[in-house]
Amino acid sequence: MDAAEFRRRGKEMVDFVADYQENIEHRRVYPDVEPGYLRSMIPSEAPLEPESYEDVLRDVDRVIMPGVTHWLSPHFYAYYANSTSFPSILADLLSSGIGTIGFTWAANPACSELETVMLDWLGKMLQLPEDFLSETQGQGGGVIQGTASEATLMALLSARLKTVKCVQESDPQRSEADIISKLIAYTSEEAHSSVEKASIIGGVVIRMVPTDEHFSVRAETLEKMVAEDKATGYIPFFFCATLGTTPCCAFDKIDELGPICNAENIWMHIDAAYAGCAFICPEFRPLLNGVEFADSFSINPNKFLLVGFDCFYFFLPLHLFSTSLSPHLSSDSQHWGIPMARRFRSLKLWFVFRMYGLRGLQAFIRKHVELAKTFENLVRGDNNFEICAEVVMGLVCFRLKGSDELNKALLKQITRTGKIYLVPCKLRGRFVLRFVVCGRTTELRHIQEAWKHITELSSELLQNLFD
Ligand code: PLP
Image 1 (cartoon, helix red, strand yellow):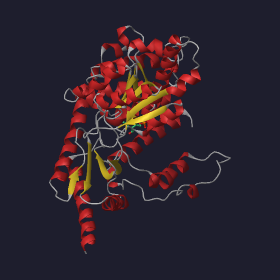
Image 2 (image 1 turned 90 degrees about the vertical axis):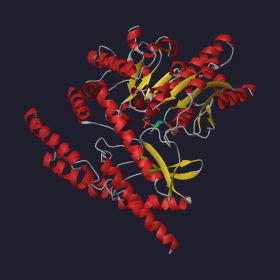
Image 3 (image 1 turned 45 degrees about the vertical axis):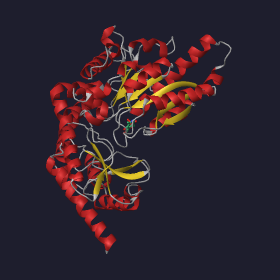
């Protein structure tokens, strides 16, 4: 393909994507395929000779589209969103077109510098303490990574390194292996599984902290566990707080947990993957009070800020930047994460922040919260259903009053019909349905239609139960 053909095909592809998104709500949101469906539809080996672009595109319709779960559909209410937007998609195209890779300043000065400034822009939107901003001393207080899981792992490994160094300063004879075998990390019983995974990769023990009636970790509980573990010779070193847990969007009390972590030399990482984006709205910002005690903080603009996957912000306050990494490592972004090479992700942030503005992004978040409230009210108005956790942002946890089996049967019907897509979670051992307002184009009518669909299916189920 030469530049002339690319010019033509590129325009066609933009039309294809625009048509796809404009008509997405008429597609079945969850595909009707079985595992392994694709293998039989394409050859078992790559072609020896080149094929035509028309053939490839034809197979997008024939092979790919039937197996796509349409995350951008207004009928998609599962997980947390991939909240992309057209400016983000165009910036990604530009990033691929430039094809540049950033790891040192010289490898791509624009990539390194724009990323640093975008971190500060978002840091200021979030009203992070000055310490977290790179412009304070011109060094850099964060990095854009791919996912929340990577950020948590980076935080845990940094904390491990810092603690080993600290213990060895007072006890130089103690081996690294011995210290690591005594390290203990903590996180909420409601935390995302990536925290436990980070502890496994980091080779350290982790304890799950029980939560209160709001699914939040409280200071007294953590304090007690830390005291118990210290008494048996463990070295508490890492606590991963969650602001906006995956099952029900609960918030750990970081303003009371932070001082304990600081006093005990425990690195407090805050995983605010989804909910962190909403802290750009003043009404939600109080939930972030206590961030000043944190050693690292991360949020996922691709979950709630109209920036497409992948894009994850990982902030460290400045004083930790030099102490958490080995002294021979420079401030180049390649040392702030596991991969060396990095994509030009900041372009999509720049496009989105400029084309929506803070006000536009706040309006988007508020609309989702409002729609979630509407759904909550519909659930509350129906005696057959119950709300299972406080609705703070765009997630509503609900269930039919009755057994887990009944709710599993309801979800099975919802998935089978493919009109809307939801996923479940467990709260206090009970099977619960999660309804997350995800789509950029989701409107009130979609919420009403979704609720009508759910109540029709549940009426059928309840009817069958009593027949
Ligand atoms: N942390 C929280 C609170 C999440 O909700 C999720 C996913 O939804 C993750 C971590 C994992 O995110 P990622 O896929 O970016 O690693």
